[in-house]
Amino acid sequence: MKDFSGKTAIVTGGGTGMGRELVRQLVAEGCHVAFCDISASAMAETRALCEAAGLPQGLRLTHHVADVSDEAQVLRFRDEAAAQHGVDHIHLLFNNAGIGGGGSMIADPRSAWERTFNICWGGVYLNTRAFLPMMMKAEAGHIINTSSINGFWASIGPHTPHTAYAAAKFAVKGFTEALIADLRVNAPHIKCSVVMPGHIGTSIAANSRRIHLGTESDTMSAAEIAATRARLVAAGLAAETIADDAVRGIVAERARRFLENAPMTAAAAATVILDAVKAGKWRILVGDDAQKLDQRVRNTPEAAYDIDFFNDFARDVGWQLGR
Image 1 (cartoon, rainbow, N blue to C red):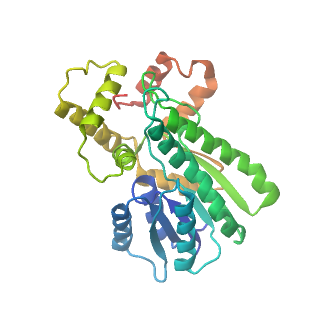
Image 2: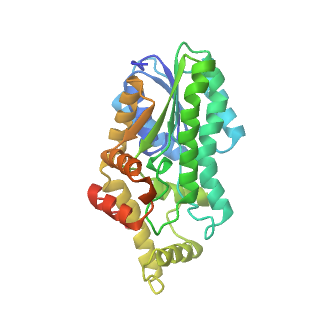
Image 3: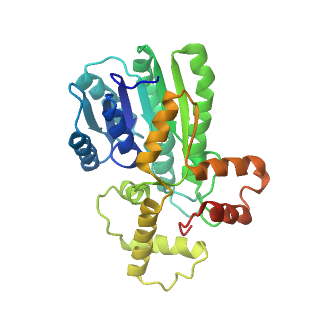
């Protein structure tokens, strides 16, 4: 699929980050897009950005509130998209939605763990199930599933548990690779790709917190502050006596650095993804850090979770995330 003009695409998590940039770039190429997110206000901003850049004449762009971990909402999203676009088929499915959180099987509540897993993995599974029949009706189709470097390396540092997100992203990677043969046998006109970004400048840290709490507020509660302080102590920081405002400041600063100090912007990442889809690549590593980490893990898999492995890699790529 070397040209997106006139095609119809579905994008999950289109309210912010890479999802927003995928929507913007697809629309700019003349692709009809239906996108979903859990935040209506974020989607309205995405649409406003597309309109400000100028929508091609006759292009259909719709947005839909949907929690991708809830099958009923996913099916409603599918039916709304089909009705509002007036089509019974789609060409592109970008399973992009994801959040962080629930890092520990031990220290974090089960609800947080499963919320993260069910969005990051369940959203991919449920949307693929929902939209595949529509893609089967198209002359050609492509499923693009966003995994992560955490889909082949389950770590964000030797002292920071990351089990829910990593488990989900491993599942996304394995599912997509298994789909290659499934599609070849049963739907050869459909291709699939797995996307594995490194550190991309997005608001995932702030967004994840809001989704877990079901709030648009940036104000941290006393319980959140206590839990954050405990995580800081577990990571080796002397945080027992840090004031509440200081804890809030640490969280805000980490979110800012993740967004602003990233080696690649969300817009650049979206361009890499779309170019790779056009080139027919099934395995899409996004960012120099992703490329380097992939090679390091392949070269020394037994050392991949050693402290020295992480520290050497972080120095090599210039990661300064306070992990």
